Image (cartoon, rainbow, N blue to C red; front, side, top):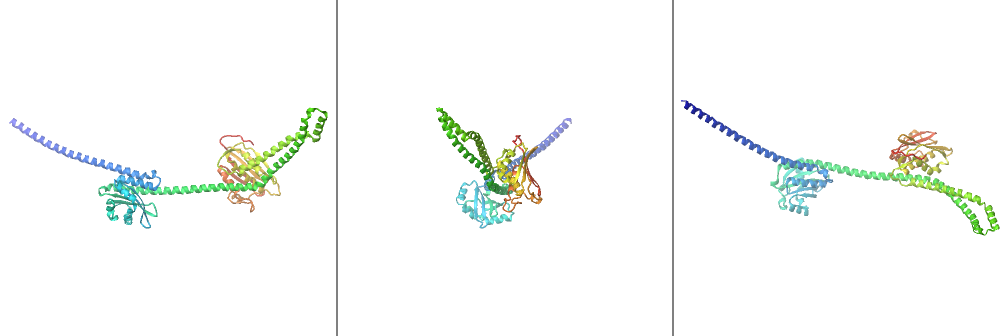
Length: 505
């Protein structure tokens, strides 16, 4: 009995074990199937990832075209090349079609079909067989998005010409005078919907990129035009400055000639005196040649001659004649040098300038304009050097000094006072006159081109305007104070050089 029960229990246990094995095997099969599905999904994901990487790489390349290429045509060529590689298609075209007659004006070609490329390059007219008008119309009906089209519909002779049977087309807006279309010809086996969707994304990116490039090129062109206009303006301004300077030279010419004529006159007079002295000295020199005979009558003759000709006075006067002649010639040299510096065409070269010396050089040029009308008081207290252009600053000071002279009544001798001083990081110059003064309304217009308070025919109305521009280029300021009937004061403030110099007053 006990044995029968044990056997029954064993049989029951074996049945349960078999049942469990079946369940386990079933679970294992299910898990294997799940793992197989996961492997397939993983492979698909990996494949999708590779595709996405290719798509991203292509779109990134399209987006960066503008940064690497300088011209629109170069950007189009690179885009065609990148697109051809991405689509693995046989031939790609960029077509520029005239809006007037819808005829192909030019085409760029890329692709792997070298034979077809050679045919198109050698005979581009075959592309006129493509019905561009229909393509343009159908693209417009589809919001100008890229379309996959059958070649047979738009290019009846595609087989005869050796072209593939499909093409993807999209337009670009580059010119108001033409239609610009990209055509990517594909065999049926090359049609990949995902790649074509990516091509549509690239169209949007390329359109935006090309628009930015067009605007950039337009801005560059505009900047180049403005730069040329600015250069012409600078040249005209330089010519205007020089013309005004030459006008001042012409105005001062008579006075400068008079200032030169005086020292030249007394130098010539001194030379005549020196010539007479030399004639007087020749005879005693010849007599001294025979003095070795030591005859008393010879010595007496020489003594009488020296006394009659007053040779002691001649010897004393020789030094004075030579000194005065030398001083006169130095004066002429200074006047000519100052006039040369003043009239020389200005450059932008800046030098270390002693403003006191600059004013003194300007005074020598205009002295003949001033000396008959006014006295000049000079008070040079500035010890700083400024950075500037000597010729340009002389033009400023000459203008101010001549204006001050012209403001003084011819019948009343006036005074011009020139003062220089330093104040911290500024060096100041003031030029005051006791002339007629300027009303407040005119003061506000003083530096306006062609404005003048002088009578018609006197001055050009450009002197103060040009002076203001010169001072502005030197980072200097100019202020005006005036009272009718009492006179006018112009005060100029220059920034001093960072390195210290002691000016000679």
